[in-house]
Length: 208
Image 1 (cartoon, helix red, strand yellow):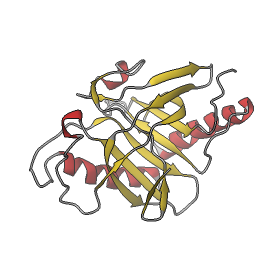
Image 2 (cartoon, rainbow, N blue to C red):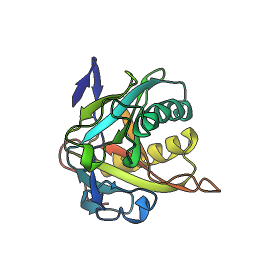
Image 3 (cartoon, rainbow, N blue to C red):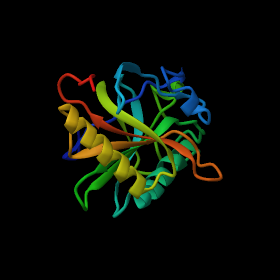
Image 4 (cartoon, one colour):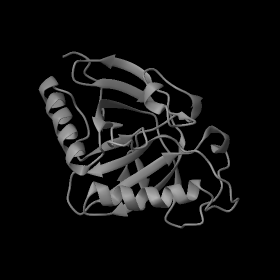
């Protein structure tokens, strides 16, 4: 776990390198750099992946819906990546964009974008005090992907479905929140590739 201002923040972590990991290349067609990961196993209902540590730009948003949190949080982070920093440089964030979605009402959304590999060591300082850096920790996740528009309704439907399947499999995982990932820019029909993920506790369950 990572602690920030008294808030327990467990991140879906990334390896910010200009290459793709197993299964990620097709998802990252719109990105200059994309996460890489190791696949532990696959079942009919989910994939188990492990991620390494990386530095991310992040912000915390209090909002009533995922849509509002994304709009506010991504605007802050994209302003930083588009030059609102002490060096005035523009950077391509590493895909995917991530949101820690709380399962308790009136809780904070934690939104992050990984820094590109060339700025992992000494990134430019954000002009906005609400944008900060965190070095994430290695972790393993249960993950399910789906296509469509990233809405709170779709995200909740997919996360509940994944949670049900994990419970049926006897998996142990963090249930207080899930992580929502967006890989693609919205197309004409909003047909983005998205993922929902739960943090694995103990040994992952790899059998149906």
